[in-house]
Figure 1 (cartoon, rainbow, N blue to C red):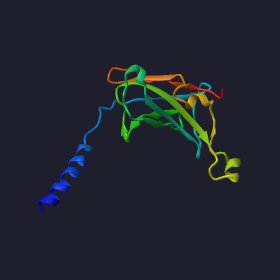
Figure 2: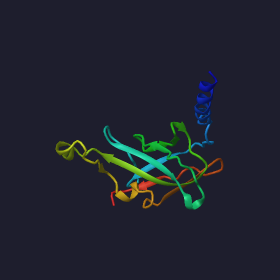
Figure 3: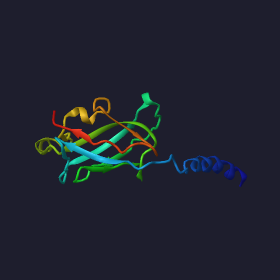
Amino acid sequence: MSRVLWSILPIAAIALTGCGSGPKLYPLSGKVLFNDSPVAPKDGEIAFVEFTADKGAGNTSAHLPRGTIGPDGTYTVSTNNQPGIEAGAWTVRVVYNKPDEAGLKKSAYAPPLSLIAAKYSDFGASGFKVTAGPDAPKAPDFKVSSK
């Protein structure tokens, strides 16, 4: 009996260490504009904003918070299905795609077609940065275009 208990104890300890409440999250929402009008994704289109820690500014978070862009161009960020984002500096990318109907007729694995310039879907090239936290200003509007 004690051998079974000693073999279960380390497993239980590992499982319990993953049951923390996680980092404090702060609300963050904003709007994405395409040529100065709100992005308005249609059925079947994929539109979201994603954040990665700005390590150069000292943010070491391993999370990738994101927010789905709604039909009015607004998004609300969540982290691991919890509303909000950790405090700190973040680099942002915007993804706005539609299915490649012609490509899908040729292959089930056809990549989607981007409705915005490719630079906006790249963390390093988008030029979008946000600081989140209790005293941080509201997120700026992210302005994208096809160029």
